Image (cartoon, helix red, strand yellow):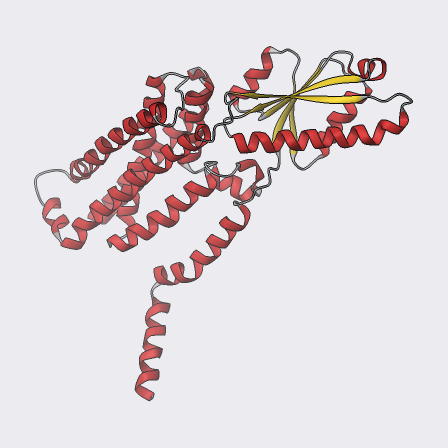
Length: 368
């Protein structure tokens, strides 16, 4: 029995001395419960909403105040021309625009009907349906509350318009997210494993003492995965158009350009992981924890970022897949011009520069 307890004690000490094992055993459950508990939700909160009020009377102002005070919505802008409606949609400033007809209160009192239009970005059909239902519910509740104040009956009739995806096809939202996830996994996970495999076999030392510079060795390792990622990109686009019937409304060349930038980010992430870990198992765990799960949960691929707590929204802003998916949705589904994705492209380029510097410095330290 003493020998058994001694072995148990030895195993405890062995685990406690291994910081990575402790991180996996104790850190991973905490991270998972936080991510799954806060990121996965069917509620849609803090949805950015813009208002175009042609009437600007007491009733419309009361409705706007109710919507702005509701936790489901965040009033971001008041529009002054119909041209601004699609502009804020393309920029991503607002997910829904509420348009009040001219003489809203007068029509409500004299004709018994007043029209309000709810224009939603339907690239994510589930979110669009939810926010329209929320807004309709607020307007209906307001109508019921003030009905006793007026002698004649009236009706406020919300009219719904879904932009970019009037058929409400789920593939329109699904395809850009899958593109980001696949490219991230292929590039980052496979690149990190390929380099670590050389370390485990002991062949990396042989390569490093060869006349070829270390940076060329790393690039040579990355090129095949870069090529395969391009093939995957072409396959995804072909399947999206001809099988899933998702149209490419915007510039195909710009879509490919943004995708190539994202592939470079993923390759650099794989290089960074390979510099930190020493085994293939550790590379898989690091890629799974640091890339795959956050990409699925925090990039806006499955759940709206606006509904997450502020800390998770901040973390999502450093996720490369978030900006890639946003850019692809705008280009592929909305068909916007390149000027509307300058922000996303700029952030991805900044990530390439930062990751390149960190990866190269880390690699040089390992060689010294």
